[in-house]
Length: 295
Length: 279
Image 1: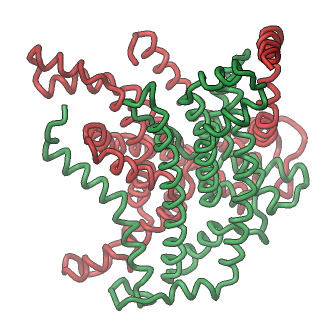
Image 2: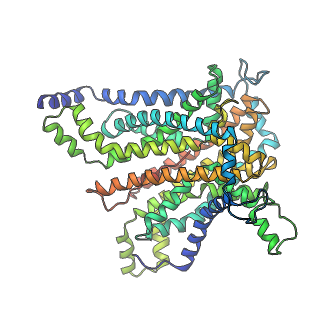
């Protein structure tokens, strides 16, 4: 039926987009109903007075956002921001060399990549438990320290800021390695060869060619670490205990024990706003890269 | 370009790989240790695995996790594949916007997704349980399916479809006989990843599951908080092995694909699993 092909072409030209929207419809309906609408309701909740039994009451108030100027909550906000930033920097310092090695390793490349992809997808809960198993007072590290005589009594490692930082880096490191690898892998090696022929030393080749060209990957990786770190709940919950609260724990707490849903919604919206700001910065940097003619 | 890597680079990378994998290996080894409290090696045993069978909540959790996982995978793979087809095969106003929007569920922190869905479900008076967990899982799985299937569509040779149509196949026949067979590996890989995400999810599920409906991760979380019995190591080992197998399969599917169809850009080593990320 050659005619039907012809008809199809004609139809698509005259009604652009109709067929596409029938394909998009069901999925978009799901995401709008169960992703966008809930976020909007959450936003509305954050401006409403608190109800007696955990819900909200009619009205408009800014008190939940004003509460964040309380030193107690400011401290949590500050800690969340600083720890996420520190985690991102550590992941970059540790992850960049690994991504660089993978991009340069010939036949081992796929195996090395798979070994980063696997933890990337494995259960965050199980991985956090693996940290607990090593760090707790009766854990493996303390057992060895005691047995080797390096410590007289178990060192408290769990429920410290160090434990949380270790858990965050452990959890998010693959998120940094993969995008940096993706950008290093696309790097045109003839540029490096040209630089070598022209007499550039290895360090100059790295700082003036490899690093600048891998910036998009570095930015993407930093974002992929920084954003989930901002919203992390499990790591500080299990490794940090009550004293090392991050904003995710504050949100969770408001929706369980404290039963203050609008305040929890406000805290959650602050996380969401930080995420959107980070994304906008990312898009700007990406935009500048493309307009400057970089890949 | 393939010169020997400097020693410090190998050392740092080796350290990072050890850091990523040793804790999990240790966890697995000690799931076979015949001692309840000590981390000293007391001999090999399977009893922590047997102990799992004696805990009804674990079996219930596993059953619910499988049920939710399969349902959510079916729905999200179907919806995600349709979205990927629209994005990969059609030009329409707002296409770039839709594509950007689809990344949002991937980057939104889980805790935000979890509590906003909880608010919605409570507002709608939906009882928390299987249905609400599944709805939530579909919502965060769709985007991952789209990313994987779209990568496959973009790597496909569009000339085959054009040839089929020129030879007289109508649109439906072309889709079933030319497009879909080429698309299968991508769809399957997307489904495997969706199942893994659903099976592993703790944070979102913890908000939208009622007290009587605990998935496996919720049960494991409770165990981690309450006991230090090595059965946690045993159940963790099982979860790790299942996930690793699924991810390995997804990775193979995606790779075999890009190698066999990589006529145009076989040199480039695209890795869709590497380019997506769990929220």
